[in-house]
Length: 126
Image (cartoon, rainbow, N blue to C red; front, side, top):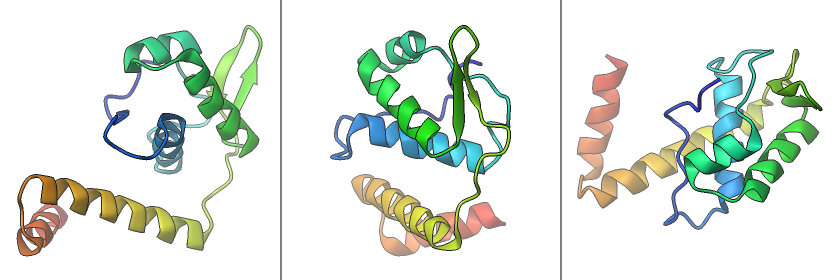
């Protein structure tokens, strides 16, 4: 698997890089972008591609494995688990709130007012 272009680690975000990656992989798995059995990039490759330390990516993979989202086998790489647990309703709501907060943060950095930000969401929803 090549690294999805959606994986981004922001140095201006106070969230630790491993946590930024963990959240992004969780979203990709729960949305179906990464399907059960999909192979993730090797630690060193992903670290190099994102400009991170190998230990940072290793921590991300370990935490995702502990959550039951990934499986790792020596020589077999790291893959999305066959039956990853689904997000609980409260967790899904929290992630939605987190994503909305992140969106508003970016719109404000652009100097966009709240009405324009809402209009953009309505436009995308069609």
